[in-house]
Image (cartoon, rainbow, N blue to C red; front, side, top):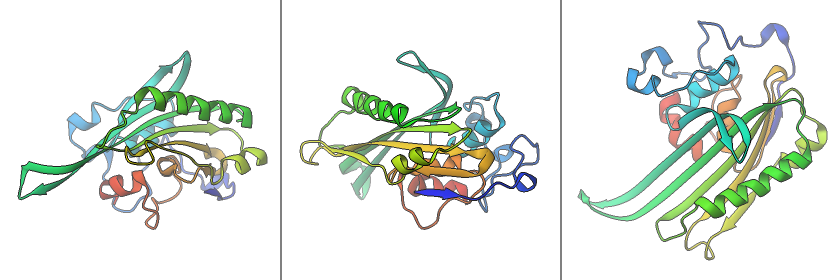
Length: 225
């Protein structure tokens, strides 16, 4: 998934403006959310990431300045979802399935293919450590998003349509995905791997997709419109 909206400085949203609202029609403004929700959301010294956090906070536990193996990530998020089937009463449940996502995002000047390849390998290492393969596990996503100053053509080609899907026990224990995304807010450009649905939250100049039923879209759209 790759898109460029073109650069138009006069028309770019001012992410730090007090009256800025999420462009998604019907989004619940932060000012109208319960205090217990808002108080758990970090404040970033970065107006753009603050607005991204406003989109993610409905479904992710968020953290700023997260350290992972000696590397600093400006934004870190975790989401866990449990789905169940029930016989008339919650106590009589069956077919429980767990889905999880680990999100890491940071600013960078100019992303490179070498850096992205290294992140893919890191994603596999994290999945090996964290994924508990069993009958209840459905899906785990490890997603890296780079917020960059520019998007080189080679990087766009590398990320566009990228997918790293690993079946666990031939799929009987679910699967995990390692996803990549690169966003250039100043130029309104982005590119995302095939399963990197959470990148939608970083594309502040566009509405949330209504046609793509990805992991984030399926769960979060109920709050975003």
